[in-house]
Image (cartoon, rainbow, N blue to C red; front, side, top):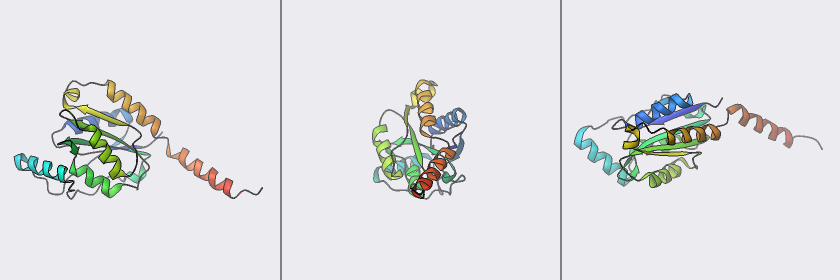
Length: 179
């Protein structure tokens, strides 16, 4: 079975709710991205907007779970002003290129997922095996159709680590075989 990690940042709780639902359905481990010095209230909201629009990355706490130990890492973010949240941008900058496959999900008030998924793919330097965009209303309504489709796509896109190792061993063996 594939090892899957859910990594997310949530300011208002919507992204956290989706991350927990996904972790249950995928049998995945979960790790929350935390800002070193979070700012709450109206000032924090304004700072979040500025960071997202200016593509500034705040300092984030070290990951509790190493993404290199997983076959697929599912990264979740809220959409801030039609932009990728700054804590997720910071996490991707630290961990891109250190793991194999990614899948992305986002929560939003209304729109911006296309732009956010493009920014995530650029930061991760890879195309995702699956994406999921949910509005806050869909999260509140417990809409599971999109969630189910995403879960199946992640499962198909995250083959077990053993399979990948077996392919590498076979390729090395073919290189060294005598004709």
